[in-house]
View 1 (cartoon, rainbow, N blue to C red):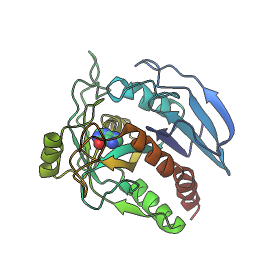
View 2: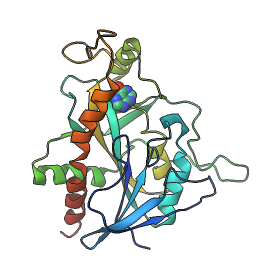
View 3: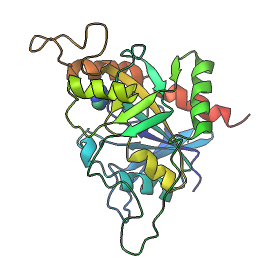
View 4: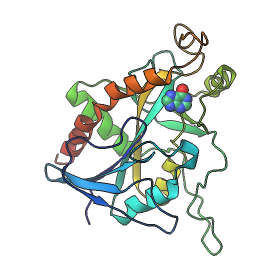
Length: 259
Ligand code: HPA
């Protein structure tokens, strides 16, 4: 089967608006079941697959996602490129809520996640090159799509993958900032490296839903319970605004293929 592009939807993105002739495909993999049925359909004459990373009703927490099953399932249906949509907190001062960014680097702070396909007896040990964790050409396609549509996308930045499901402490975010991280989310790893192990192009489209703990002009959010608390309701309200831009960006990425 030919799949021109796969999209993994994160928090706030559980289905792909406008996908035509959509068919659900329930797959199994040697690593277990993916987070949800794959939804395969068309955008114009392109075939697109969509997978809801947290399940279709956001029932799977970041540390419980079966990343290996998700990536393997996408490979099984013939996906050669993945655009991963990730909700994040903004650390860098110009990465305010509602910003969209295409990171260039990442640091993995997760632990205990099954993060390789080559970890069972008899499998060959692979040391994949991961110096550039995101595929340059796919990043550039996303950035070009943004320019074409007049949707501002920040080019670059370092994504910190944290364990979750809780949000970070202010001290943890200060450490991430010292480490050179610009954005923080819970699902960027091991997804990116698993795609690399299978030779699938992969780029992340990060939707900044909130200031990371202690960041931003006011030093964080401001709710009744705590002057620095982050409001989950507000995160989801902002994500709704951001995710509405995703289908157009994906269409524009696909349109670039023709050139
Ligand atoms: N931290 C980690 N993950 C997130 C955040 C955050 O502040 N916002 C959205 N996903």
